[in-house]
Image (cartoon, rainbow, N blue to C red):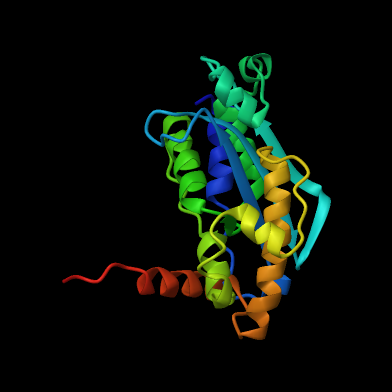
Length: 223
């Protein structure tokens, strides 16, 4: 890393941890979505990150983040047809280290939210290790587990993000656009917060406990 990049990374590392026991209405969540060159977490690459903040329960259209990481090798035509990020945009993207530092500057130490967060988390973590040499030890909340714990009657029929968006009549204007997907997921987070408050799950830490409990319940039992 260049000196300015090292300084930016150090500034982020010095940020204080957030209080995960604070009420939802007093928190800043960052909803994250990524676009990649494919679905193989080992061999495929991070192409873009989109993020939208939910602050004190509200979405501010101006409080969003988007970046395309410069690619040395453009992804396949089939892949481009999915996310719409063309070869020129990929080749002329932001230096990966600078892109990731900008992302860290945007998220601070806020809890991160995604739907099927394992993939987003893994692809971002892989890029962080490759380009910045750091682990992103951030709290992640996966709505794919939180929502079924809050709406158990929907557990068997709602699996994909689009299933939940349809249930709550949330429109996604540009599917597979990272910022648009993050915005739609942020709307879903608002629904989750409303349902969680009614159940006494009033903080990010409460979401984490809900997710862990449902994961534990779904572990296969030994014979």
